Image 1 (cartoon, rainbow, N blue to C red):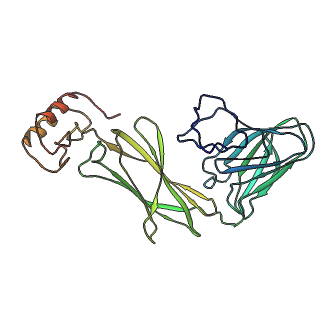
Image 2 (cartoon, one colour):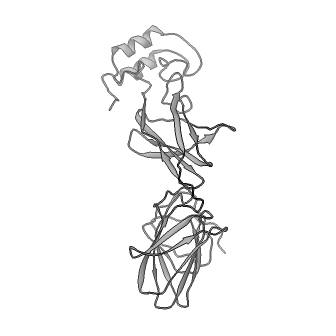
Image 3 (cartoon, helix red, strand yellow):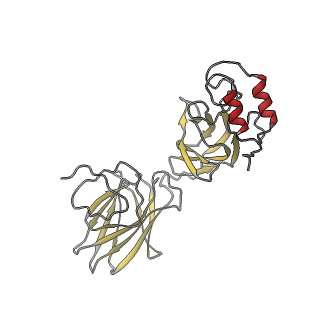
Length: 303
């Protein structure tokens, strides 16, 4: 049995009773499952059919545990000839309820058991599309968490070079039952998005995430909190800016004032990156700092 293999995402491959481990993120246009059992993204397909059945996977939510009410968690096509086919799918939070649609129409509902399985059957065949959506949990709790006291603190001095600058996000999250997960969702200056799991500080209601960003520019972020009943709270959007090192006075434009600030400290020394005038973070205010700033003279990074 092959226990590990590196797969090129551009190539076609067939899995036959083997385990494949991939050492990097892969993006698939289509995954066809032709088996009675397979696990993908922690979701297992246990399919019982008297005939051969092919499942074409369209989508698995990468955060099934954190899915909100009404959110799609699974989407696939199944093809067989006739008979009753039972679908037993694993990887779902116990007691969560799910609605199943066939070709866009309601088919049934299922509550995940203690082992995380949901089940449903189908008797009408050719090719059918099945979509599964998160519904309210059986706990009866419909009150979302409350997010307050959001904030971000940056290193002093601000720095956009790896290893020197950092930003610490924090907030307070409370819930009438229990908080399950808090995430900080950041939109970067190049419009890419990242999501960071926030850590609870001891027995308090404070959550934090400490990060270092290397892109300079304007950021926005919001907090997403989920409780143990999958109720979700979303905060407002907040913004903060991270200036490039050569904009010493952080006014959004590199001008003669930045060069003046550097010259006022010329010859000074200190720890690496001790002040913003130490543009290259080498602990010395020297001609190279002037060169780096003048190389961006007249540039505006603010957008």
